[in-house]
Structure formats: C-alpha cells, structure tokens
Length: 487
Ligand code: BG6
Image 1 (cartoon, helix red, strand yellow):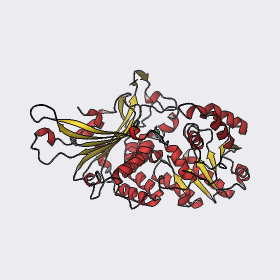
Image 2 (cartoon, rainbow, N blue to C red):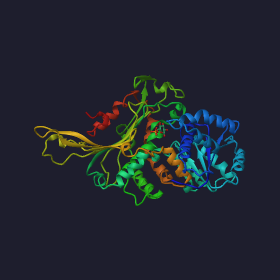
Image 3 (cartoon, rainbow, N blue to C red):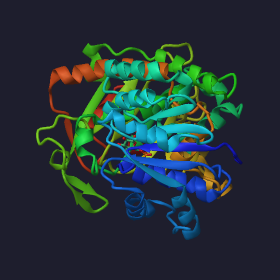
Image 4 (spheres, protein in one colour):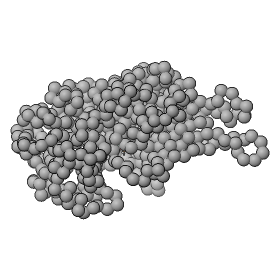
C-alpha cells in the first residue's frame, strides 16, 4: 500500500490510555513497515499536562515504547518515528488555545486528521473550537466509542458534530471492524459459493457470537462503572459482528454498499418487548474468583468502581432478525469480563438432516457446525459426522480445520493500524455510519431502560467461569447450549 498523500494527524488525548496502547503503536507500525505513511506526514499530539515537545517525547519513550513491536523495537525506525511527532499544549477547556493549533497547522500540505481519543463529553466542544479557528475544512474527524450514553445523547453529539463536519468527514471507530478475521468473514461469505446457500433459516438452527475476556476493568473502573457491558461491547462490537454475519451480499465493497446492507440488518432486529427482557437478556457481575491459577478480586472492589455498583460486566442476549432469511433463528450474543477464557468466536449451528438412515445421532441438530474463531489464533472449523472405523455404522463428530497462520505467515495488520491508514487515505467502509449507530442504540435502549428501572443487582458469577447460570438456561430453552458446554 504505497502512498504519497501527505497528512497531519492531530491526536487529542495525547497522553491517554488509548494513545499509549493503541494509536501511537499503530502509527509506529505503519511507519516502520515503510511506504504506508507519506514521509512528510506528521503527528501533532495535543495534551494539557505536558510542558513541551521534549517532555512529550520523554512520555512517549517511557509509556508507548513498551507497547510497540512485541519482538523488540527497531531503534532506527523508532528514532525516525519520533521525528514525526510534534506537540501543542492546549487546555481543551479554553477554546482560545485552539489558535495555537491553527498556527501550528498553517501552511501544511495534505489532509488534516483530528483524532478525538477523549471522553465523549469533549467531542462537541473540541469540534466547535476547531470550527472557530477554521480547522474544519480539508479535514477528517475520528470519534472513539462510546459515542454517547444512549440514543438521545448520541444523537445530540451527532447533530452538533454534523453541523461542523459533513458525514463523509466523520470516521466513527469500532475497532472490531478493523480486525483481519472480521474482514475475512466477508471473504468467507462472499468469496465462496459453499456457504451462502446454507446461510439461512432453512439450514441454520441458531447462531452464537461470543466475545469473552479474561481481563477485568484494568485502570478504567471509573469509565466502565458508568458504562457497563451492554454499552461497551453489545451496542457496537457485537451488533456489528451480527450485522456482518447476517447481511445480504453487497453489490460491491465500496463504503456505502457494505454499510447499507449492515444497516438493513440492524433495522430488522426484532424490537425487544420490555416485558420479555427477563427471558431474553441476562446480565451478570463478577465476584472474586480464580483465573489461570491466580486469585482476582470482585468487580465491586476494583479501583474506581462503586462498592454497591449494579453495573453489568456480563451480558447474554437473544436477538431475532425479522426478514425472510433469518425469521425464527435465534442469535445468541454474549460478552463478559473475567470469564474463563479470552476468545471471540462465531458459531453457526446447522439443522439436523431431515431423515436419517444412519441412526439417531445424525438427527441431532448442530451435528454440522461452523466455528469461526476470530481471536486468539484465527481458525475456521467445520464439524461433520463421519463413520467411526470398524464394525457397524457408528457416527462420530470430526472437523475440517483451517488455521490461517498455516497459509499466511506474514502481513497480519493490527486493527488500529488498518483503521488509521483508512482515515488518512479517506476510506470510510470500515467506519460506522450515523444511521447504523442510531439503529443499534434504538435496539439496545429498551434493555438499558428496563435494567435501570428495575434497579436490581446483576446476577453474580465467579471470576474465571462462563458467567451466570441463567445464560445457559436461556439457551437450554431453545434446546441448545454454548459451545464450551458441548459434551
Ligand atoms: C473495547 C472495550 O472497545 O474493546 C474494552 O471498551 C474491551 O472494554 C475491548 O476490553 C476488547 O477489544 P479486543 O480487541 O481486546 O477484543
């Protein structure tokens, strides 16, 4: 991906967690790879609590360097990367400071990218301050999730930002869309004839999408306690994955064809009747437990979390899609912190054969199953029944295994690297359009409201387990179980 388009990448929240762990390491990787970033491209970090460029570079050396290149840092590349970095000290509470930014950017070639790695409450003030000094022209703005707290607050932000920037200038990040295996889902579905004819209600019994984490809330207790798993993971990452799994084949891969199809799915989600929420949604909160032999504390004792918090760290929810392809097929979405394993995967359970001459085992639903493991270790596994060797006709489950690292050893790109390059190069396809975001908020809102009104504590689960038992009971009602509960 050779480029000569110059750019200035302005990073608000220049000393934040995201800048440190994701954004600057991703820019470094793009720089190190060579040819991906124009030589003249610059990074302008914006922060309040740092005195000057020298102090910022010290911070980058101390905090960012440990997060780059697992196999050691290429020192020559690191030094030339630091040469790209400039610094402007701005107090975001003081719009007049933005004249300093305007002066720093004046006369530079190429596109300006403003990356808002800040809390959403700062999105609108920053956009207004940028406009007040004329910096909304020839620019793109990147908004990190969560964008708002509910439909109303998200609309308020989108309205205000939309008065300053056109929709084509707004890049709403959902980093799951930048992950290689998520891209690969599109290739699997639309690059092969094998799956598509079976990818519908006639042949699919149920679908599970899980994003499980072993990590807890780390240093983000304060943020997380006001957010919870439904807003943090379901409204965005899980519903985006669902829309890619369920969408119709797009006409092309241009930015709007794919997003139009995803939007159709999001708009077809069956609204949840508030009276049914107890049946179709489970929320949990982790208590103390053990993960891989180490004791971990309860959520309510994590720094920044209220001791009587009712915030959910686990959600399992049943989703239905009201269209001809998917009517009646349950999609079970699940995410949680401090679960037994770190895994993101999609499980497509196919229906049983309509008649079996081979005995009852072939009549069991789910005998054919496609398991798409997104992380860690991207694999696709297709389960089939086969005859066990020896006398008689006894069937056993076997699988075809596709491990991507056997085919592609090089060239994997981190999600943030891909997405940042897309912003710099003006490619919108992997960013969430406003209408998609609204549809997703609209669907989760009854659950948010009902949980807030009920004011009941979430169901407890021990850290290191797969969440509350109610999540398994929900699937049992549909005659199925989570993948790890098989056998
Ligand atoms: C983020 C959430 O969007 O995604 C975090 O805010 C979560 O809470 C993270 O840990 C998970 O992303 P990944 O790429 O590690 O699966």
